[in-house]
Length: 230
Image 1 (cartoon, rainbow, N blue to C red):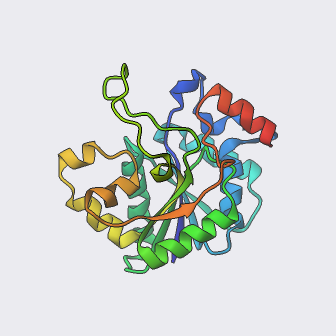
Image 2: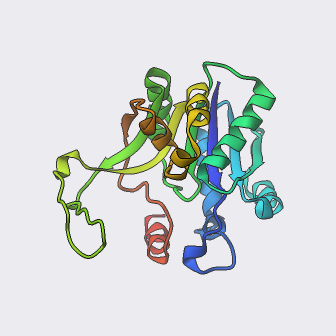
Image 3: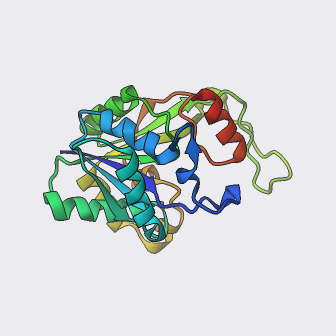
């Protein structure tokens, strides 16, 4: 089976507002609703889960009841202290409901990337089935500068080898779970996202073509851009 995992566990403090950014209005609907609707349109997804900060579970339930009009049920799961803990809370719920399987595919996605396309979702699912793990990326447009101290340049890598990571990131769920629980505490502390779990363990991650429009709404400027795009 193929499962969507929308990650909405953040508190959105960077915008300095009174609610997490995924709940801000984008046009006539909250950002998270736009994202959920995209996932609901994907016929390849058997079930959609949303990982939400425990303090915002009831609020999210109310939003789904207000804006989502479909027979497909969206299941909420309490998020963890970080991104990966939220993912594995969702994995645990999936296995409680559907059992363990070597065939399960998990499509993880940021709730604040509402412009994800059906093409990206399809390509992720196909790549995860074939390769076990994939990451959505776009080629770096600007030159990338490496600095260890934030003061001086240490290196300028070849731009043709540089990509900007987006989401979805998709996996064979059984493989991802096995790799994660093999990690040491020190290795878990350096994780920045789920693909890093595979990289740390030397497992190849297939690149899937993203889109420049698949922006992550993190700052006020991002929000202005998203409003213009909408």
